[in-house]
Image (cartoon, rainbow, N blue to C red; front, side, top):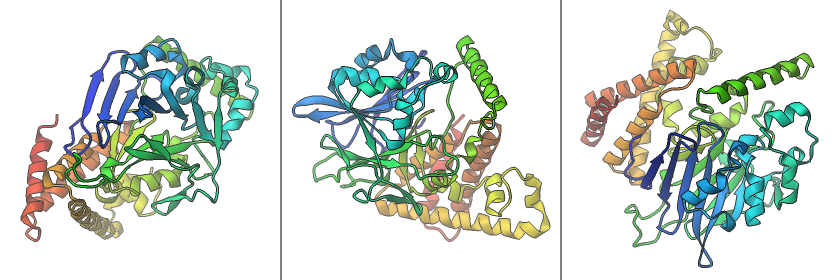
Length: 428
């Protein structure tokens, strides 16, 4: 992945075992550090480290899968994270791969655990044999011995509007050293949700003062970080292809089949139909933002992707058809003009967004690096997603070629297009 000149610099450690990658970056100043743990099996977790009362303290977002119960303390020690000094643990939702180590860390540190109020049922319910098996030995009732804050939306904490969708704030801002704060947001309720207690966390940096390293003088969109849990993913959960992986899939398939026989609903819900409004809001609501997902690696969130680089399936949906409609419909005579209009609108939106990035204070080189990262990240996924991303890559190239060859654009934009296209050629 391409390093971005305006994003915080990172150090990266790569391993064959889990976690397969650990990154570390300093935020705003050298006193606050974000360490990101990425896993093939189980969910990612993230740790803020900062000075408080002269001591290095930590705040966690998720804690990882219970399969690491015997390793979690050594993993943290390797990366200079003292589990005795944890202030808070924020859990994005009840699935065991996200919260399966919360009891260990909370009991060792005395830290409070922050969860959505709907999480309470998960802790207090009686688990059947099938549920106990699917939790990989994690017993949610252990959390009853910990200090758990069940957070509910309230009028005292107004919601945050993202692309006209309201995400309720669950508590006051949580301070992270002297560098910024965390906002904890509930996912809006939906007929089909990934989990009824899911929440997101947004890191908001403090406005900088003169003399700091950021040459722009204040915070910028890409200085903000969204921890999206399983709500917004670039890639789904990753698993290594070994016997444990095969055994797990067989067990899950068996449990789903038993549930279907008992009339407990379909064996598996289509994840594309979960939280559709919220997910679309996140995709369209940010000019730029760093996204730290529950699974897969971090990526750059931007409304350019759904607004400017349209795959055929994007256009089909925009025209009001089902996403699985045959793409050949776009070549029908009565739709060709509407398709051309959407392409023109996408190009105009792209140039406006680039102009906005320049007004924020980003240089042409920084904008070029953003576009390279967006291009690189439109890659992989399942069969349909992979096909869409390949088409979006093509649209990025075609958009920049048009910008480079346009007679009506200024030289700086032409230079942006030319330099970015040259960088694309070096991407394998």
